[in-house]
Length: 308
Image (cartoon, rainbow, N blue to C red; front, side, top):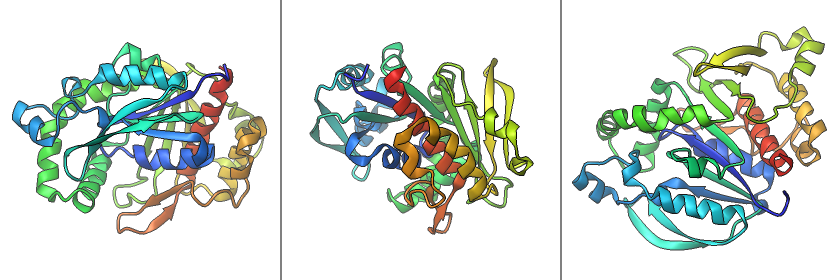
């Protein structure tokens, strides 16, 4: 199947962490081999028009899902597209952009799994599901610092979007191969985040039980593998706490690297300084080992998809 491009989907609600996750995955795959596309570019209406027609950006009718599906089909076979461009700073559209896809295409956004046609275009499907309280914090921070909104405006928009989030965004979780939930260990600390990875049997996952069963009690309780149910179906769950050490996470990462030579440069204890990076609540740059492991796992699946 190496004649075609590999498409990774990363879907989640607004400010769920899609861009942060994508950035590290692209680093692992190699920036020269990655094309990143945001599905916000497929909005049907600009910000002013959305207000006039009374639709939020989360509503399927507010997006050209048919064009997105057509573009996914073209990208999958290596063909170029003329992609629309939505400008979040102005709330309007810029001139379209000519995109010739790289070996890997990451499409991240709100409604990537909304139709059967788009879902079938992805080789690997990831859904981000942080607690709503944390997502609200992230959205307020992003939209006030980067998009010029007041906190009151952001909260009003979140309230306005809630019914569409419930009806159109969250149900997409059931289509994901991997569900990623970053969450704070307690309510007072939202910088050091744990991660809970739901691993559905829709794609073959690495055998994490190999290392967790082998040895070392040193993994527990910081790293755990167990069985659970998600949306009524049985799943494996890999949990990594924020206090897991570099050495603990690195040992787990080596399973991925032993299977996938491409990843080996990212599995030394030094690793790559660009993965696992996130901005803290006060603007400081932080290193998160749970985030780095998540980015490495998704990159592993994206490369492995060549052989699925």
